[in-house]
Image 1 (spheres, rainbow over the protein chains, first blue to last red):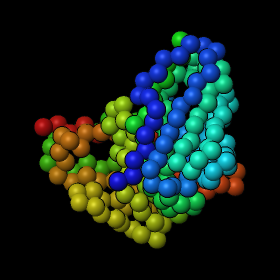
Image 2: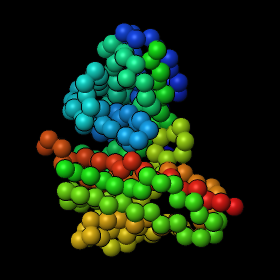
Image 3: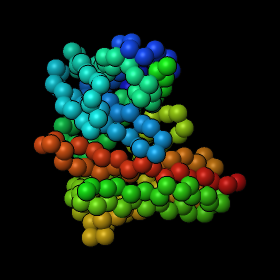
Image 4: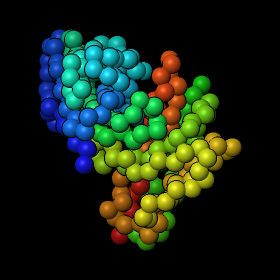
Length: 115
Length: 114
């Protein structure tokens, strides 16, 4: 079974802090994704990566950056956390580079609260 | 503008009946459509994928249809059980700035009443 793990289930940070969210997948998938999910807004793509050191902006990249130094690991960075970044963050991976043809495997999510 | 629409009202259904969910889309021409299940506080879990040239796909008690003329997918859970209570998301392929990736609907909650 594909396993996608995220470093924390719950995280509380203060405004202005730098926040790192880590995601690891164990199935040698090429594609990795970071989403945030908010009530009434659904899943929104922040960034994705189709290869090591490659990244593409999603729908809402402002205030975020990412890093993919190894194939299995994709990190989301909040450079200076703000209260409007309080959300559920979900990491996902998929096998192929042709989006939609392959299912995505999601991690358990990190519920981040910024106070 | 592009839209993926799922009913925002929860579907309450008696155990044993068939639950039917709808996913309508506008200004997309997806080659694939996927359905996911999400439990509260958890990540979505993939259920089924259907291609544009397939009319219907089944997996155990689940059935998905895909009508590219109507721009609609229907998701059926037959003989529903309380354990089927969850939110179900549809997702379809879309081109964004030169990249082909998934766009998700907001989900439709199902509550199966024993």
